[in-house]
Length: 247
Image (cartoon, rainbow, N blue to C red; front, side, top):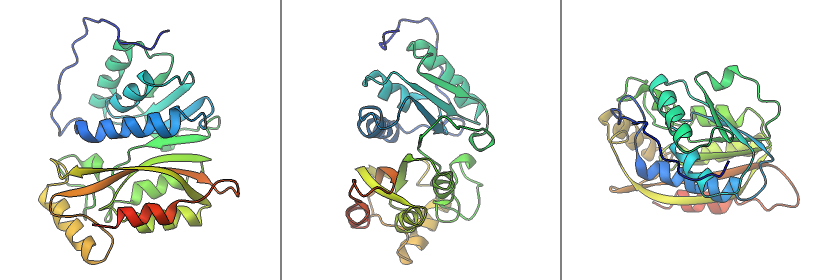
């Protein structure tokens, strides 16, 4: 099927940001990272798995701009987000390319996949009692990110925040045998979720420990492509961290 916008009478309702993750700037950047670093590079073979699909918008945007003809299998626990993703996938006629299950990523086997993609939860806080609990990334914001890296996929494209212990995350990936082969970075303003007092207080504490990097107005969000180490591909970890820790 031609991957183009299809007309539909389906109405996709706008949910509360406490029900379904809503940050257009971040979702658009995730889509750009997917398109340029994964879908357009033919590195991902023909089967990709996604942790936390949300409402499906980033993958849909990336698919519409790429020539990728494989399958992306996503997993989303939030029922509201899952239902919204299903509506959008159907609207855009992408049923053959993008499939989302309302189940736990970690409870499923993905033996065919060599590539994992995700914009994982990265809000640092002492607990998950947040505006949206599912966005909690552990005490330093990097817990889910590390758990995804530990799954051992050949290629992993993750969104990483500069205020969520990026140095330790990259060092952890290196110990697991990964190297940074590509990255894209965008400045973002603190928004609805990151401005919650509990989150801002935590990242301020992390900043004092050199585990969070940000200015009064912005932080950096990066799309990072990790790949199992190869002598043919240079590692860009030092360059990546130099940029991420500049603020």
